Length: 258
Image (tube, rainbow, N blue to C red; front, side, top):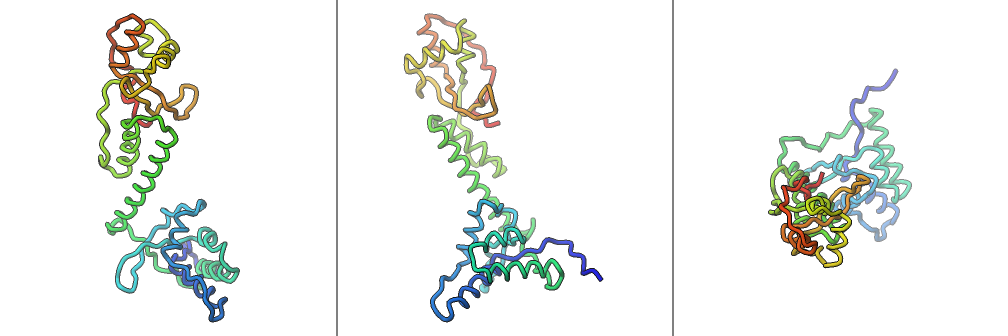
């Protein structure tokens, strides 16, 4: 006769895995000193593991004092990844427990992951997501060190506000910015000529515009591009000995991240 049908994925809580690790370390030490695995250190390893999407398995448990603390309910793959560096006995116990749960030989642990009703857990998840997003925004800005403060603020605002669901970081007040192509078109020149003129006269500075994150014309890669403000436009026109009334730029919101 076949065993009971299991309609769930067997998981093992990070607290239980830590208990197994410490039990086996203590047994191996045979009464001597051994390195105790702290649960906080274990969950830090879970979050840092490149092969584990920890956010999917986030949960809570109640400690002896009644506090609700963070833990992770790990499926077989993730649990095995986390004990690969432990002894073979630890690996065997973790595998056997999950296999027994899957087979119905052991009762399935009550899920500790709580849903929409637990506001504290949802707040924690959002805080964690904001922390990760903020790091991503910082890394992105570091990749393009010539971006101006407004462009960097826009990156943070677009990424973080999307996760927060509200305007946590305000968008900077940015006036009209013009590309070299837009300027060249009005002055009857070429974008290459405008660019060479700007470089020769050191116009790619904050006084005349700013670097922003833009898409490459030839690919989907992001790149930094200098856009000129009204002062920059006027300065280029003066150097060319020409004047022109510029229309609104054809690409508003160049600071937006698409």
